[in-house]
Amino acid sequence: MKTSLNDIHFIEIPKISDPDGRGNLSVIEKNILPYKVERIYYLYDVPSDSTRGGHAHIKLQQSLIALSGSFDVVLDDGKKRKIVTLNKPNKALYIAPGIWREIENFSSGAVCLAIVSEVYKEEDYIRDYQEFLNFKSDRQH
Ligand code: T46
Image 1 (tube, helix red, strand yellow):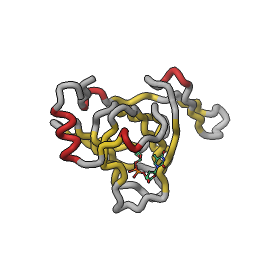
Image 2: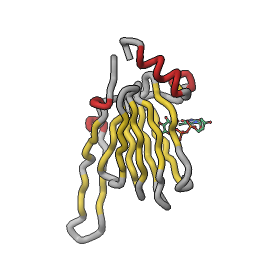
Image 3: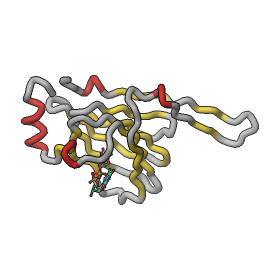
Image 4: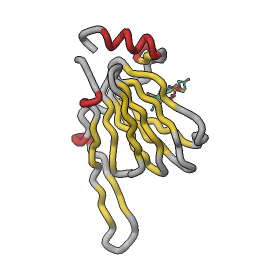
């Protein structure tokens, strides 16, 4: 399937605010994500001048959540680029396959949770930007 920035969207995660002021609880039930979850990982203790990502996935779908703090996600479909800031633990950013992403500007204490549709396979990564552009110029991606 040919994907573009239009295939990226926010998913609202239900938030249960405690009536007695004990804070919030958010829950991700399996039906709120548009894929079957195979793996969960998280980034933390990332220095503010570091960039994570810098790749695209061929098949993997993922949702990113700023469980704590904030960071920017640079998204690129080979034609257009946009930057999205994540800073709310009850908002997930859904990223379709075939989108280049870089994650940067991590605040102190930021935790980036990734909930993804595939097991870890290095063959699913495109880590070279020119190779990504070649991949996108194929009609199918
Ligand atoms: C993504 C962003 C948000 C594993 O062994 N298993 C795993 O499940 C993962 C995710 C990584 N690794 C190894 C592979 C590398 O040797 O951990 C090392 C760091 O991985 P990478 O350079 O891919 O890390 P990021 O932060 O650039 O990217 C990761 C995910 O790989 C990627 O899917 O979208 O977080």
